[in-house]
Length: 406
Ligand SMILES: Cc1ncc(COP(=O)(O)O)c(C=O)c1O
Image 1 (cartoon, rainbow, N blue to C red):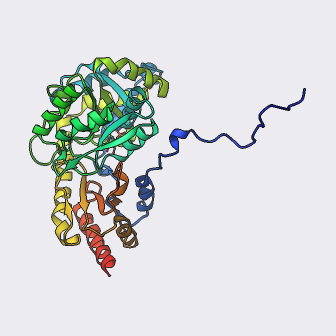
Image 2 (tube, rainbow, N blue to C red):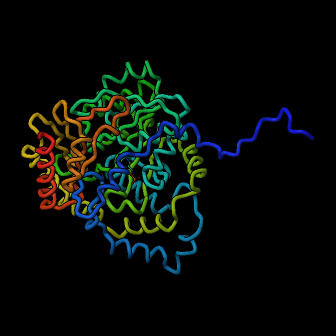
């Protein structure tokens, strides 16, 4: 038989899928690699302070999970929804934080990042619009872009997302969902006030929209009173997928997060997780459940706040002496981040080059913008270093600012 008429077979390996074409590797990850050089004081990563990791508590929790009596189940394949003890502990914490939750409402995920991937798999068709804050958490943007979404920014001001802008956007874009980090937002540190939360929740009910409320930082409050989750407010109760994680209160390396989903989405999310990884590590879930059972979580979190609050004050308090005149910045009540807007004409990438020469680092703000980047913005994280290191790092940053002026 001759091959005439058959298509030529290329010997080149097939290309990566088109959906990856427009998804850049996170510049933040690349910058983090630079900042891990010894001697660099980094305000770049959103890293919890390692000296606050409860290693002894985790050691005991893993020993318990590996107990002779239990290892038959804790080292075995398990259900996709998650360890029943862990789901109970998570539900109890969500109830204590003002969100009525049954263990069956909870799906344990491999970090809350996986929850974002599952939501994208379940809700987004290529070309669908997804509304996000401007700026927004970078890895969420990546996740929605990879699902083929059109990512559309919602106007934001110093108080966060503007719910009044939603109706017109929803009519124009017909989005599937709105993604928000209403408490101690990444990257800005802003918190959405109660009135706006109510307005957002009511809008979700009225406009026919899913809300994804991502809350990794809410437990890390240094000032003021906690606000109710958007998911608990009228209009949003059966419209909101609420996400959280142990990454910021225990350790990120454990990769334990969760989502609390309305009944209408639960089955689909479980199927998506089955397809992704069958289930989150059984041994890690068992250890997390034991840690939560054995630890006084309120006392543990009070310990984190007691260390992070003065670090926040040290950073925010020193900025007037460090940044060029005309800069503006947020004064977050909690979380890990301060967001800076340098005066017009400044470029945070240029400043970062000078800063790295002086062994100090931050993240430029432009990658966090879903549409038009503001190159004069940057993010500073205050959790990783002591007050003394923060002072040294900020002194280097001031020198980098002076270098840039020359
Ligand atoms: C807003 C936001 N969502 C999700 C995550 C992912 O966290 P996890 O470690 O639970 O995957 C982060 C991590 O920094 C974050 O800032």
